[in-house]
Amino acid sequence: MKITIITPAKKGDRSGNRATANRWSTVLKKLGHKPRTLTEYDGALSDAMLAIHAWRSAGAIEQYRKTFPTGPLILCLAGTDIYRFQESHPEETRRSMELADSLVCLHDLVRLSIPKSQRSKLHFIRQSAAPLKRQTPLAREFEIMVAGHLRDEKDPFRTAMAVRDLHTRYKTRIVHMGKAIDPSFAEAAAEEMRENVRYRWLGEIPRWRVRQQMARTRAMVISSRMEGGANVVSEAIMAGLPVIASKIDGNVGLLGADYEGYYPVEDENALRALLMRLEDEPRFLKRLAAQIRALKPMFTEKRELAEWKRVLSGLNRPE
Image (cartoon, rainbow, N blue to C red; front, side, top):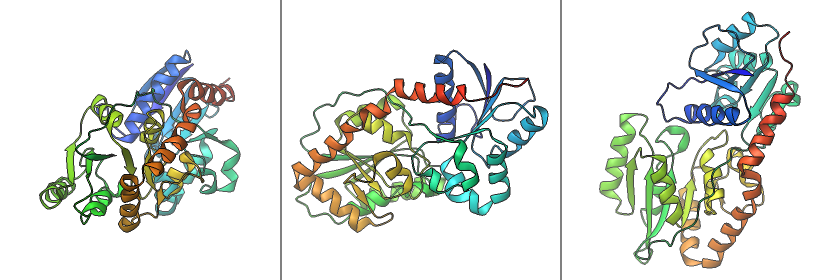
C-alpha cells in the first residue's frame, strides 16, 4: 500500500513525534509498503493514512477524511494526547479518535485513559530496539544516565535533584543526554552543573553515542511526568539495562506492574533512596537487570513487525 504518514514534527527534528514517524516508515518499508512522511497533508491519493498525534494532526486527519471518506486511517496516540489534550482540547482530540479506523498506542494502560467507545479499535504496539551488548562499567564512577529532551513533561532535573546531597562515600554520577527544548532549560542545566558536581549535561548527541553510554552505564532513570510509551524504555530493555522509573502509566504499561524500580512521580527523596540502593545493594541491581532481561522477547523487531502486520491487515481498503 501507499501510506501517507503525518507527523507534526519537521524533517530533521529529533523530537519523539519525528522519531516515531521515521521508525514507522522503516517498519512499513520492511513490510513491503510505500510510505511517505509529511507535516501537512497535501490531498494526494494514498491507500491509507497513518497520523501521529490526535490533536496536532487534527487538521490533516479532518482533511483526509473529507477527501477520502472510506480511506483507511490509523491514528497513533501521543502521550500529550492521552494525558493533556483530551482535557485541554477535548473536541479536536476526540474527534480525531472518532475519525480513525484504528488507534495505535505504545503502552498497555492507554486503554484505561481513552473513551470506552474507542477502546475496541485500540492496538498496543511495543516499539522494538536493536540488541546491545553490555560493556564493563567505569570503576571510578557509578554512572547513571538520563536520556530525554529537557522539557517539562520529562521532569528533567529530578535525578540531578536526587543526588545533590548524597554522602561523599557514594560514587554516583548522572550523565544527562537530550536537547533543551527551551533556552531556559539550557540555562537551568548549566546552573545545575555549576552547583552539582554529580551532574553532567551533554546536550543533544547522536543516537550512537547514546547507545554507547547505555552499554556501560549502571542504570537509567526515566523521570517523566507523562509518557505515551518512550522508545528509550525499549532501548534499555534490549540492552539489559536496569531502569529506575517514575510510577506513571506510560512506564508501568511497558515495564509491568511487578517491576521493582519505580518511585512516586516528582519525589526526589524516593528516587534518591533507590539510587542509593543501586550502589549499596548489588543484589538489587542484579534483580532489576533480571526483570529487564525477561522483557526482551516482547521488544524484538520480529514482534513489532508482526503487530503492525496485524493492524494493517485489519484495515478496509478504499473502493
